[in-house]
Length: 278
Image 1 (cartoon, rainbow, N blue to C red):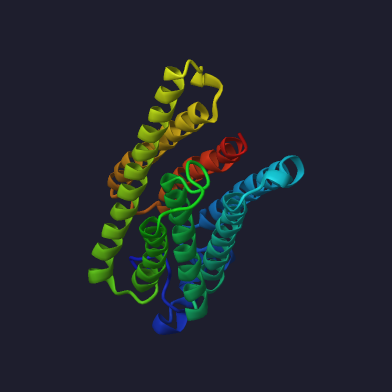
Image 2 (image 1 turned 120 degrees about the vertical axis):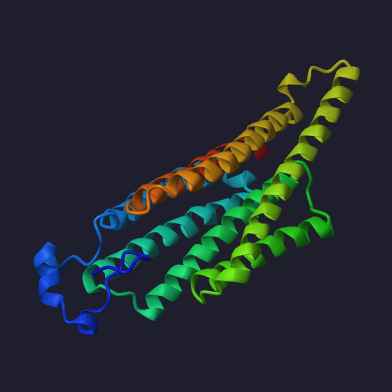
């Protein structure tokens, strides 16, 4: 009684099998076995992001409120976007679980929050990789334009792919956009590491120990950031290959996907303020 995609059963009136279906699914559950844990999964990650938001807000507003920059404020907004994404995802699957179909307005809301989540995450990662308010006070015009372009493309293409179902063209366009964003992040991070190494070399030539300087601290942060992003890309590719063999348990894929997003972003979210405040 289930469609192959999304684990959503057809509306009862379309086949006249409502009574049979209810006898096989106690309490009127309309989700397949592999989809039942999804609302709980979204709720759990909403709690995780709420805790990160509370910790980061306390750290910035209570301990270092006088030193906050625009990048701090943007990062305070990221957990809010993540929480919204998780709450809407939980609501989406609750609706499907209760009614057996997905209303258009719920699907639109879900697609919009997913698109916003992707755009906000990569926008901030690109900003950090470019070195805005970390190694440079202002970005060059072309660097700033590339950050905005990545965010806009991710919103438009995700909406086209997820809500308007323009699968063929937008799928490849979306894949190219993600690869472009990751290439910008990795190349810009490597550039910042090179520049910080040059600064430390100049300090050594002036008989200054760079170990306790902001240049050394930021260089270490960018090295960790580079490692996390590289690990994120490799693990995500491996995960997509493994999930091909788990089509009946999509909640497992969602858990690992959300953990991959949670770990590098939360690491940067909790360590970046320390670097900026040096």
